[in-house]
Image (cartoon, rainbow, N blue to C red; front, top):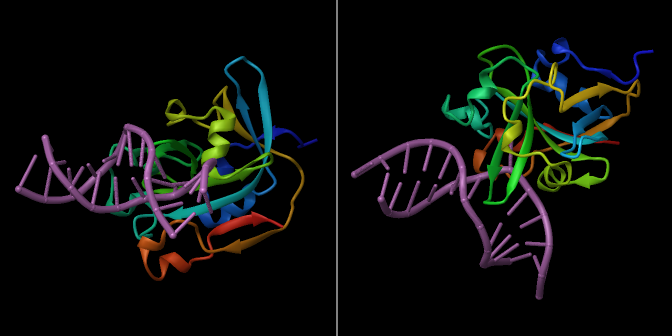
Length: 172
DNA sequence: TCAGTGATTAGG
DNA sequence: CTAATCACTGAG
């Protein structure tokens, strides 16, 4: 069976607008400090697409923080915001194509800040490779739930047309 | 509706 | 060095 198999590099090196909806219903697996593992179904994500996307952190080019977005798809981009929240993102596409997917919700934890707090994800996960890491990866579930789209949250500053792009994907 | 809280970034 | 900004949350 293909159930419970880790997603490999090929899944992540596609365009972010293909990968993001594909993550809905997949399982995020993380290793807790005690050594046990948790598995959480992904229910909400948002796509951030390249330097032209005014809402994407890479829109100004490379910085120390966004460097990982220029790496090969499958790497983890984690950043700290509002003085108290870690945001978990998955890098997609090929080298030098800065795209990422914000994981906004998993089963049991709604909201990007609450899920990282609940799963114990912080800056130490920056740069982890989902294709080979021993403490975080994503598994195929064999299920393919439907999804709906809406504009992205918290990016009003980006302006048109970016604010209105339907790049938020939520499980139906 | 709005304050909290601190890393990141551009600019002097 | 300064100061603005910020892919959020919880209280009221």
